[in-house]
Length: 161
Image (cartoon, rainbow, N blue to C red; front, side, top):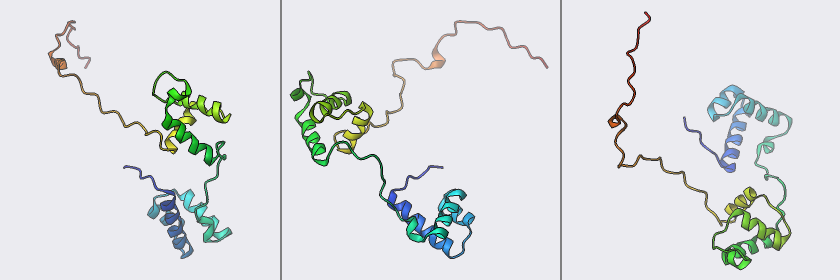
């Protein structure tokens, strides 16, 4: 069974539809089955409805640590990326996460781990995620495995029954 990834809007629609059914008296177990969630999740939704109202199941803004770069700095970072690494003293035209992280530190005084720089590049549209590599196919020049000569002679198997 392939798992479907829902957007935040789709998850909110699912929660609100389930909430209407819970408020109409539908059991938590049947709501969980119908909407493809665990009974624990349906129970959590039911508890939220009992303690508050349906608005408690609405989508909230995802909080998190605020960015250490301002929107203006992020816009400047896009321009820095477009200008290329040679402008910043590197010897090739290829941006790496380490190089861009170094430039971010030099220009803005903010240090980022190279992994986070990669996520930042992706978020700013400066980098695409790598495609899944194609399944490796054996080169046609090699013979099929059955064509290899057997180099060791094994004694016949002895039955123990």
